[in-house]
Structure formats: structure tokens, C-alpha cells
View 1 (cartoon, helix red, strand yellow):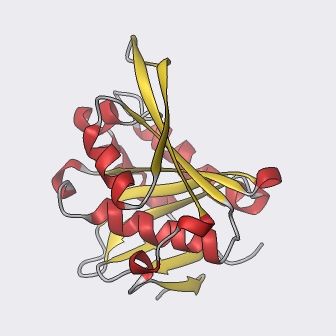
View 2 (view 1 turned 90 degrees about the horizontal axis):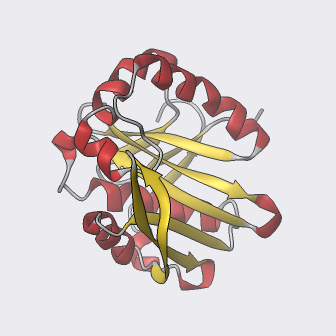
Length: 195
């Protein structure tokens, strides 16, 4: 299997999760505020779910179905969240998804991490189109995606059931030809290992 990629930005290192970090994932992703805004995170979020999720990452990467990164701060190595891509290889398409722990909200980390992942997807993996979904009520996520140049393409009414409530979802997308050079500044890519 090829080495797991490592992406580096001005403040962040995006790298593979390790099994022993499941307790950190459970703590950060398990908060009610984080889970409430994320499509695929249940609440409560137990340690076994975090362990199973991390255990799948290498397999997903090897088979080309998903690529998941731990978002860590350069200054102290702390894990602050996760970001990843789910691929539809036949159509050179990917969906981006992310979560950031509550103590790290409103610091610009999501935009920075997503710019790195999208640069990698477009420049290295030659992805043609990246999509993202977010709840209508999650305006903050919508603003992040707008900053990244993603266009709103539609409103999916009562598209997902979250915590017993039918949720309206916005779909956004960007094409490789629309990806701006200004967002690529300060991003470096590495092939496996420590940076």
C-alpha cells in the first residue's frame, strides 16, 4: 500500500489517525454541539465507535473509497478535528466532510484544513468535482464552504433524518477549473511518515 499522505499548512498538519487516539476522537466528536451539526456523527458517541472508525481508515485508503485525516496543530501536535474525502472514482468525484472540536471553533482551522485537502484532491488525485452537504441550520459550515469557492447547487428538502428530525440539506460543489490559486498558498504535501 502507498504511504498515507501528510498535508501541511501554515498552522496545521493533516495526518493519519492512530488507534490509541480513539479516546480523543470520542471526546471531541462526542460533544453534543459537534454531533448536532454533523450528518454522520451520532450522540452519544462511544469509544467503540471511535475505535471502529479509526480501524477502517487504512482499508478505505487502500481501496480508494475514503481518505480521512486527523487535523492537528503544528504548535503542539494536538488533534483538533477530522477532515476527509469520500470518492466516486468512476466519475472523478469526491465529497468533503469535516468536524472540529468545540474548543477550536471560530479559529479558521476548518477553512485552512479544507483548502489543503481540496488542493491535494485537485492537484494530486486529479479529482474533477468536490461536493459537500450541510444542514440548512448549520450556517457556519455554509460560510466555510463559500469561502472555499463552493457554489450552492440545491436544497434537498427533508433529505436526512437526524436525531428524529427530518433535516433540510444544502448541496455545494466546486470544479477543479474553479479552484483558486490564492487558497493554495502555504500548503505542502508529503508522502507518509513524520513531517
